[in-house]
Length: 356
Image (tube, rainbow, N blue to C red; front, side, top):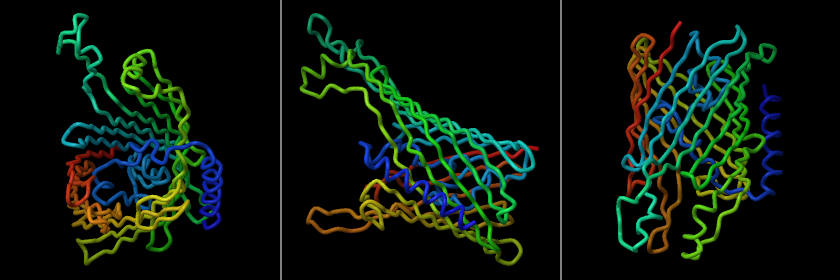
């Protein structure tokens, strides 16, 4: 088990070193870092070591093997920034044989109905609001996941994602991208361990700009004319550990701790250095007969500079609950994507179904 984890770490470290020498933005494909499923969002993303349903295709594909049913479904809808941005997610998984399982996930994060005011004035120079057109800026992701048990290594579970990215900004620009993720899980006595390496080979987005639509406006306003380019998303690793503590017969508590490690330079997180930064997150789930669940999460610890030059730390609190009705689960999360002084709370609902 230790050898597998070291191999994953070595592979992604080498990839990070190679791609850090290219021109890669620090925050690329960030819509894939938001998270899916109200359970995971309520626990600040602490799912790498424990995820056991169709959402494992996102959090850690090795977790697909934790499902005990033939078919798993998951749906989620969330709205951010007072409903301006919409996030939709759907996932499905099913076993291939007794040792492996397949999963498919779809994600769309978009801002729709953006006004295009290029034709606001007609040929006579008159203001005509009927000339306003609308477009969408949308990000899409397709994840095809495969997981397989490795019995010779003490019950180790391995998983991989092949993902296809498509990003559009109306008719002005679009990009296609491809990448790979690798994950692993193992249970040792009462402890659960997991690792997820996203974009292990680097995810490449090839941008194509339709400059003919904007060249006149950009020239008049002095803006730089965009050109076709290649955007690279650098690798990122998340290591997680969790344990479930039963309390008497009907109650239980699960504690989870994740360490999100990035290798693209100094970031504003709790543990920051160049080139490695670590963002820890803590998750808590309490249950009654595995039927009624309360969840809490704490993460995204940042250092903020005040107007007087002093600094203070902020963190992102999350809260949620879930109800299991036979094989149907309804989850809710209240998440804060801003800081504590200017909070931007979002209500997230997700539905899970496990069918035989």
